[in-house]
Length: 411
Image 1 (tube, rainbow, N blue to C red):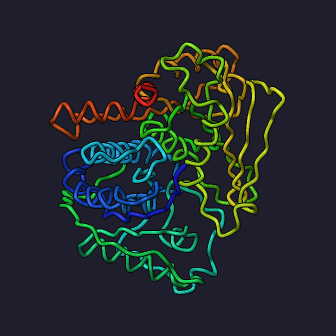
Image 2 (tube, rainbow, N blue to C red):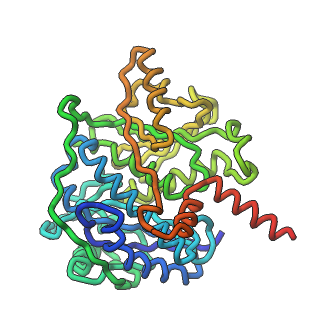
């Protein structure tokens, strides 16, 4: 495994409305410049892409279902664009090789008219968790960046100045070199109103949410699915309330024997580690050491659904529960406390089947949320680029390429 470096990309606010064409106009130049620079490094890079979202401000204590649709659409659009740019540049997004890039997206509750107290640090809230945080939290719990990419232009430079000012109140001061990249054209036709919930069914907050999948060779589709699930977890107004739970059902190895190129499937433990690593990077923002901030409990004896590993982010009382699933339902029909399920368009029918089972048991149906299918056709007119993109967000295609590479190397 190659050395891993960490970089930060501070983008400008998204265009309005959020469409593929407008996202491309706004972000493609910055993404192209950033990935071109990272491609030349002698390490693999974990890149945290930060999206300021002024429309979120003032809405974060309301039920998260009220912001879910717009937020996941934005996340999906930017992930699609990132992978199209990487396909065009030939940037490796699959393996830990020099020049490869592993991107994660974080939403920022930040408007350029917001003011931050000079003594903000004394009131720092350690219970804040992503994937939506404010600028001081990002600054005070900063990771060690090798490169900080900032977008050229008034808004981009204003964001960089505020971030560095807050971060430099820490000791030691912010390190890492700053690179300015070209900004795009961001058109805001009007400040959009967030989608309001159906009047007939009032939104409720969710403190136990669940998602399921194989999560083999973690790609953009997986990242969107996991981020969208985390997005639904309602922030607690008080640290004394019961902890929040993000349950990830990960298909057990025994169920995957007949998958194509099964010999290149990662084992359950490795897939679980990748899921937790990704989620911690967008959820955990603490000033404690990793040993103090994170506690892990492994259930080696079979639990209701099989093997399980719980990873708790102590400060915000949030537990990532990775469970080995051995059937199509997993904890959705064994844990009554779950209230929300996230699915993709391809697994929509699974949500209905889950709720049929729950209703049979006399339990409340889960509120089912859907993520968009990532599609390069929305971003690129070229069919070849679309095909390149599709192969990068398919675990089967990734395994096929690994099989071909192994065959070639053996010749």
